[in-house]
Length: 325
Ligand SMILES: Cc1cc2nc3c(=O)[nH]c(=O)nc-3n(C[C@H](O)[C@H](O)[C@H](O)COP(=O)(O)O)c2cc1C
Image (cartoon, rainbow, N blue to C red; front, side):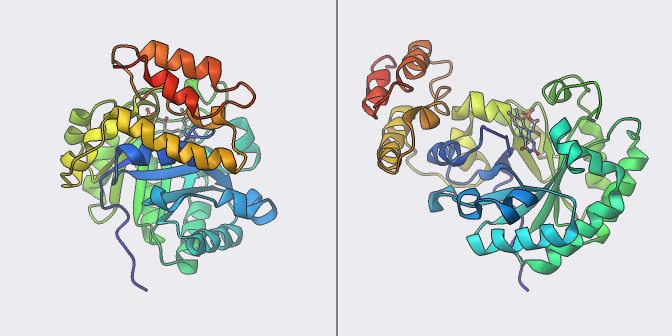
C-alpha cells in the first residue's frame, strides 16, 4: 500500500476540544491553504456507537485534515481508523497526551504512556487497517515516569510498531492534582528532549508542540525537528498563520487580507445558517482575527454581544467589520 507523507507543510494547528471544530477549521483554512489541521479528539466509543456521520463531518476545503482519536482498544481503534480513511481524512492521530480525568477513566490519553505495549498494539492495528498515515500525539513523560530513558523506550516501542510520525507536547503531565489547563502551563517545557528524540530516531517524523507563539520560533524548531504544531496561539491570534504558506510551504500567491477572510467566512456562515447552525457557534472562533489591530476590541465585543441573539445573521459580522479599519 502506498502511503503519503504524514505532513507536507511542516506546520499544523493542534487538536483542541471545543475549539477546533469544523467551523474553526474552515476559518483557519481561509488564512492558510497548507497548514495541517486536526479535529478535536473523537473517542472510539463515540465513533462506534454515536452519530458517526456527524462526528466525521467536515468541509472538503479543510483538507489537509487529520482526525484525532481517543481510545485504547486496538481492534476498536482499527475500525475507527477505517471509518476515518473512508471519510477522506489525511491522517489518523491517537491521543496519548491528554491528562483530563474524564479521559483517564476511559483509560486513554496521557495515562497510556504508562502502557507502551498497548499503545504499540493500537498503532499496529490501525496501521494494518488503513493506508493513510497513523500518528501519535504524546507528552515527554507522565507522573514519575519522566526520564529521557523512559521516553526513549516508549518511542522505540511505537517506532517498532510502524509509527510514521510523532507529535510531542514538550512537557510532562501530572495525572493527579493538576487540571488539564494547569497541565498545559505548569510542567516546564523541555524542547531539548524532543530534539534528542529526533536525533535518536532519525527515520521517525517528529513534530514539536507546546508554547510556540511566532513563526520565527517555528523556523528555529525546524532546524531540529520535522514539524511544529501550534495550539493556543493559533486560536487566539489566527493571523499568525497568514505567513505559513509563503514561509514554510513555498506557496506565494495573492493572499486575502483580514477583511477578505471575514467576508469569505460570511459566505460560509450564510450557508451554515440555512442548515440550522447558530451564528454564535461560528463567530466565537473568529474573535481573534483582528488581534493587535486598531478596533480589535470593538470587533470582538460586537460579535460577542450580538451573535447569540435569536435570528442573528451574517449582518452581525458585517457590522463588526466597520469597527476595524
Ligand atoms: C481548549 C484546549 C483543548 C485541547 N484539546 C486537546 C485534544 O482534544 N487533544 C489533544 O491531544 N490535545 C488537546 N489540547 C492540547 C493541545 O493540543 C496542545 O498540545 C497544547 O495546547 C500545547 O500547545 P500550545 O502551547 O501551542 O497551545 C487542548 C488544548 C486546549 C487549549
